[in-house]
Length: 120
Image (cartoon, rainbow, N blue to C red; front, side, top):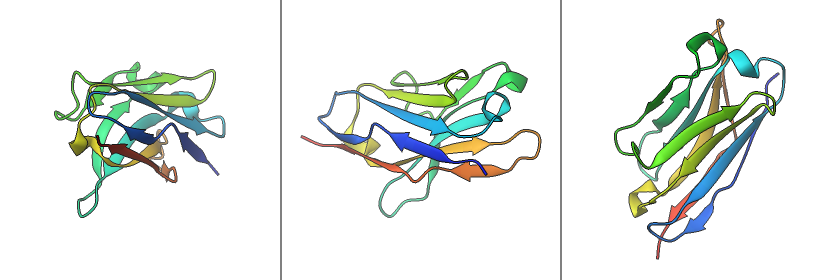
């Protein structure tokens, strides 16, 4: 069973930065696709960024709304994925969820979510 533990959320002023972390248990991390999703009140959960594992050579994808501001990365030695968020805007306010997509089974696992609030 894979467990994901997120940390790093909080309250930040517009223009500020936060870094989210997602620590995964188990030995499947390096080959898995890691993603960050977010869900704002009254809205559907959306993909923010994802990073492929050893199969995908670590390539990344971003939502248009965060390109140039957010950076996803991973440290396979620590079984941890990160989301560096810069130039935060009030519309980035949401609960952020970490996702692990196991390859090749495509089993998906979710973290418990961490609140990010951007407000002055």
